Amino acid sequence: MRKLVIAIDGFSSSGKSTMARALAKEIGYIYVDSGAMYRAVTLYALRNGMVMPDGSLDTQALVAALPNVNVSFAPAGADGVQHTLLNGEDVEKEIREMRVSEMVSPVAVIPEVRHRLVALQQEFGREKGIVMDGRDIGTTVFPRAEMKVFVNASAEERARRRFKELQDKGVKADYDEVYANICERDHIDSTRKESPLRKAEDAVELDNDNMTPAEQMKWLHDLYIKIASAE
Ligand code: CDP
Image (cartoon, rainbow, N blue to C red; front, side):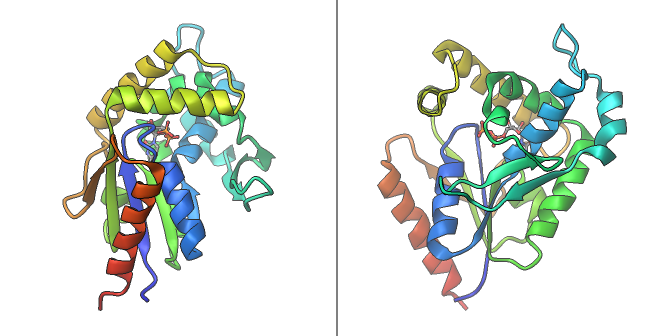
């Protein structure tokens, strides 16, 4: 079997992270959640007074501080989830809060933020054997990835899934707020200038509105076997 780079892109809460993590575990690959990296930078901005009370962002201050922002991952712990570290501190739970979700897309449009995180992501993938999920993995981070998937589902279904996920994690949330945030991020992510969310030409599309998690995993695993065993 060939060792691959696997890029899984798609809209917010389309289930990409869950399927990417599960596939990586099954085939012994590294898994990287690129969205967590944008969330960690956003948390840094929030903690350091770079988000004004009116919700605007002090972009200049954040860009100037970027050399002091280190994002890394701790190996998966007992819960099987890889934890995101901001300057060495485990921020895995905090980066999923709504206040981070509300600011992350404006942070992710900043070219300097993207350049720094994309360089780090490319470094993670140098040895292949990696599954990475995000918005621009198949287009910008790994344009030559051997396997590319683009996941989509309706906004309502995605909001339902995210709401449940937050509830299960004990994070306070309101369904209407989650739905509005998903629509808002879809818009910002798809219309930004720097590497917008779009399907790579050679990506395989997966519309998972009516698929169970098990059906989705089988679909993904079959695709992996087909590509990894091809000459
Ligand atoms: O899990 P969810 O779909 O809510 O989003 P995420 O993967 O945690 O990503 C959070 C945000 O980071 C996205 O809405 C994008 O604005 C940004 N992002 C990005 O610009 N590029 C990536 N490769 C990954 C995330």
